[in-house]
Image 1 (tube, one colour):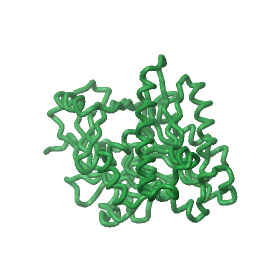
Image 2 (tube, one colour; image 1 turned 90 degrees about the vertical axis):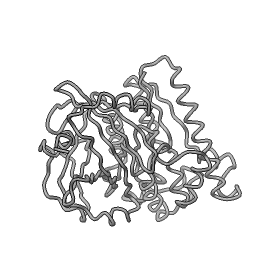
Image 3 (tube, one colour; image 1 turned 45 degrees about the horizontal axis):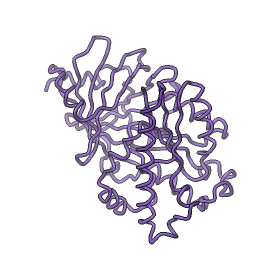
Length: 363
């Protein structure tokens, strides 16, 4: 059985309700059993439990997050009992949305109270799709009339949208669906992004890679929409046509683990199959490490900018350059770089700058 759990999030009046209907119709036709976890905040507020009725916003967020986590556990347990090959669990908002409604210290205290951490919560989802609020680029369509739990002004909605993007920055697969087209096309772009992630019809990865001057790390660390991730990547013995690796990914001692198998289709397209590992499985696979290659250790700065998601890799053996990558759904998609990233040249087709090649460099 294949179970994927995704988050549909976004600012107020972004189109989530319509998106859920489109997802149900599209992926049921593709053979998925689609399960929806309703938005917990709206459930509580319409039921009389709200930030203004609880003792404090902190009390409300505690109730919300506890219920949200339990609902996800129940849905995942139920999914495993179903007689079906493919299950898509769709979360109407996820655990990290709560971060946008609290101070950093309040959120950290709440995680400690619950005995969990940000990495485990954020990366428990397989993918996150952020629908940009109509308050950013489609202001004439912004309304509070279709949701009694929505109270934000246009300005507040836009600011909240930014906070939500910041909260999810750092996830391995975050995509933003903006208002650069009309609403119907926006929904089609969302469906296309989810289809691409699920590998419908095939799990192609379209990735472009650029060599850049060593970036200003103080600038990156100062950005609310930038998250630093520590990565250790180990290559395993494999057939000549495949690249097999395991990866440890996380921060502050909290990690998740993946195995990835890549098969090249063209310079820009690769067939990529990835699965989540337990720590025990990860350690077992390390026993098959290719000892002729060194481990790749790097700091990855995940940066959301202009509704695109950049991954900036800083390697310990370079002090004058770095690599920035972006995954695309369409090979012709325009890339909009931040001004402070100084591009040297594109190295998508240059094998010398692939992690696999860097792992072969002398220790």
